[in-house]
Amino acid sequence: MSRTVLVGVVLFVLGVIAGRMSVLMASPSPVAASSSPSPTPVPVSAAQPGGVLRGRIAEVIQVPQYTYLRLESGEWAAVDSAPQLAQGAEVSLQLQNEMQDFVSTSLNRTFARLWFATLEGAAPVVKVAAPPNVTGDDSVQKALAAVEAGNALTMRVADVFAERAVLSGKRVRVSGKVDRVNVVQGLHYVHLKDGTGVAAEKTDDLLCITDVDVAAGTTLAMEGVVAVDKNVGMGINPVVLDGARVAK
Image (cartoon, rainbow, N blue to C red; front, side, top):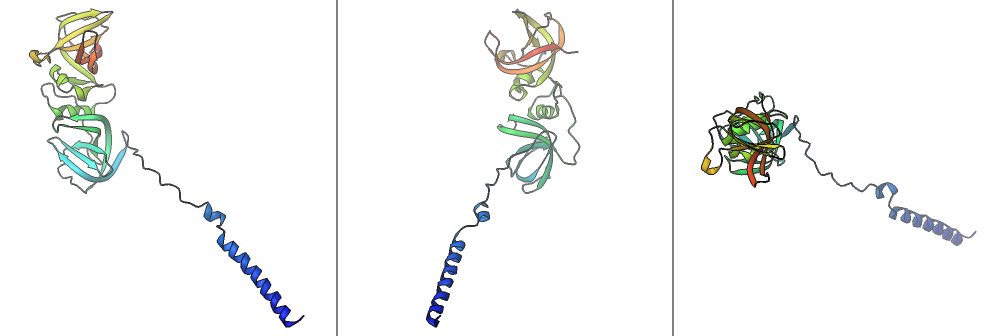
């Protein structure tokens, strides 16, 4: 074989090899093609009663008995007055009760969601009922923060009217004298008065709906669930005690 032919064969073989290498380098590897990054999952709040919520404080609002905290996560919480807390501090909160559309009359503000909590390591909130002769945002809030399912808050008639937005759906006990009773289709519409409230504003008479027969003039305690703006067939009442029973 001549030198010229040999050189040609060698160059041909090198060209074939170079062509195959270029094709292989241009083709994406199966691993690379399938390794596209998956979307980052959106974090979901796992906060629940009895759990712990940790984070950095973004905002602090101080009122006489409570400290309202907004964490950088956006969660709002209320703890017993803790004036030492400041923006930027890291906190761990033991969650107790979750309140939806919570209305704070002292702040004139509604919270879409608010946790009542204690600072981790602090003493738990004492379970108390609202004082019988005290009205106001903080006393009612403290009672609500402590109440558990099935327990009733002891309230006055005037307090139920004043705090009905907060008390809606809560079990409440009210003591007083039965002013009058209307019976319609087996239900007893009991008008309960305890000397609080203003007659001209119709906040002195709490309507309790029950299937229990009680007599006018009787002094007793009734326990039921607060219902707001309820149509009882005789018009809409701003607040009633629904499913009421005579408390022991």
